[in-house]
Image 1: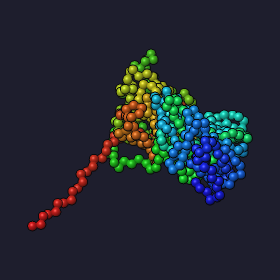
Image 2: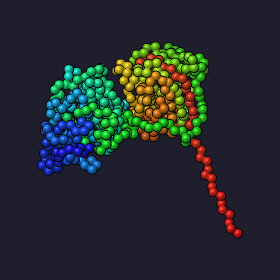
Image 3: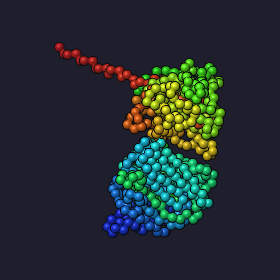
Image 4: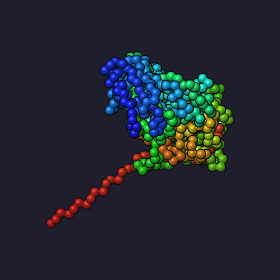
Length: 527
């Protein structure tokens, strides 16, 4: 990220080590191309324009310089931040971008171990926003807080599946008060237009915004703390989009992800190595053979199995067929109106599921597909010992069934029809977030949208709207063994209201048998 301008250079690493003074005078100059105010590399090189104002950068108490690729980074002491940068007043404008590289000393993820790990790491704190990592049972969370000119605080959360240890990630934030946008990027990939609640129709940063930038920290137990080392701190006075940010960090950060955050995938499903055998096609041209969960219960207990019925509807809704399509509708289109429609067939471990979906309101709703669903420890989800589920989400992800599920479409009208952007793969029991892909449906109009889900030997690949959306390989090493055969369920959250499904087809998947290579003819021996 060298600019074609005269630069000031301060070897803060050497000065701090030799003199024992963990502070240096840095230049905070005018803007360069791309609106860059400064780039602090922490290996002795601060790239900026000629100084107009001076700021001070200093290490946190007990912080040390550690090797980082070709240079150095700063690692914090337990319970302390890694770095402070004193920012002059007036530098926090109505728009801008700030980013930094970070490296964790252990992998953070979801799962039962997170219940007792108590890991929360403050990654950045500025005069008007902060971000912290929290390891949770249901996933790794990036918790954000933002304040405005009226001293009102907003909170939001971005869920990730994991961040690997000993690997450098680049985290960046971009804001623009004129549009009310606050975006988060991981390795140059836009994670989300952060949806603070209440929604920011208009927003002004505190005036004047005074204070320093604090970066890096530790969390967890003192005996085995998790640390976040810091490198490559950059500030721009422009709200960078994904293209501009990737260009700005290309010299020192890896672009792209592999399932850690919202990962962008190229291409689509490829079946050239598989054989597909048609197992089932739902007949939506005839009246739906469905039974409601209530009809399976007597005196509050499950009294019968859904024998002779092809579908079971759970929750306050109705399911019917009309004009060759399945229509699911919530009778309570609010937070309590969630419904699930199960197909009562058990499908094999290796299968391809195809259906198309058309939400009645493409700007409001959240749809999910359950697959490989079975009772906990085996058995059927309709065994008589199974409790009532009635659409309440916790009864599906943390109740008496095991399953995978993918939220493949999510959009919230209350927050301006804003897409969530992610297609999340979770493994249950326990609501374990294992991979974050891309919601290709939310920005693709009304539909119908084709959904294809391939499950083969622990591999889970989702394709939506003709694009690969999410990928995960379950090796049975975390969150329990690989789930094999089981049931399929279509779930709609209450605010989806209504959605139509034009088809549902399931194929059995197997590897193509390779034909023996033809051997060349044996040459005849000369007589």
